[in-house]
Length: 391
Image 1 (cartoon, rainbow, N blue to C red):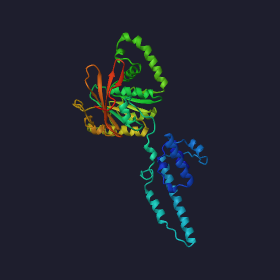
Image 2: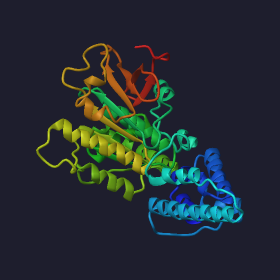
Image 3: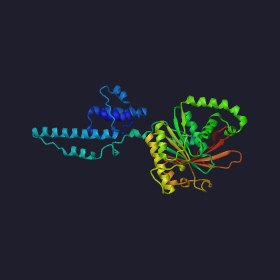
Image 4: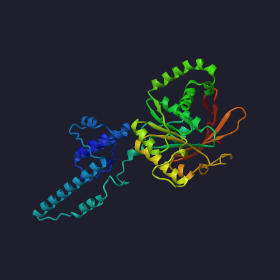
């Protein structure tokens, strides 16, 4: 059992422990598992093997290179054999004393383990502490959206949708600025809309509060360059970074590989509808390909334990009405289905301001709402107008 506990704590995945059949554990092992669950509930992550050795001096960690689920299956089988041996000994001891020993109810427990804890979830034994989200969520900086979603936690996805030119990329860049400011975060950014220089320039403009159009004017360069160096220094001090590939990436699997290689804490994809999935091959319809892309992106987010923010287009003709719904998303069944949150961006055509309505049209964990924002390009800032969630 110590081998399984060590492996689970090394991989920070205690599900095989929380679902391990309690009747197969001795009293000390049950106390160990209870200690691990209590620690995880209190601090939001499991203890390391070294920390558990201090909490329970009788515990000795054991190392293995075998996969966690393999170790779990081996441990269950070994414990089952030990349990069956114990039952046999108790039955023989009872017979020697001329007593009967009802082994049937104990055997039924073993029959229930034909499917081990590594292959199923049981409601009665499920670890309730897993309900509580752990890790650092990504926020948008829009108070109503963040209040309704409580942020995008590791394993969750946020989809920003809107017509061409409404500001999807701009809103995503505001979110990237929020992530950078939160400190010690590494973001993998895949932009199918603009090159790295343009993405970085616009994020610099948000930090330094100037209109990125000034970068296109030669007479402004001498004035802006010192300011950009200061901005670069400020971002370095946060301990955060954005990583963008030099070459264009089309296959979702490449995104998975890069995020794992660079140990990224968040993923941002601008123009997710441009991606393809090698799993689908060629000759497939657009919605089938995007369904595979969407499923893979969700799987990557869950596998790596990172929040993911993506952008996509609305259907042609959608967004002109006062409201739009998830059915207006291009390939709605493909992209909107897997996202935990979908925010629609609708320009209001304000005479003097770039005013937009942000509609939370899908919220897996709560109510839908809308809020108004003004984007000021002269200072690259965003100001929330609505405070109650009305459209």
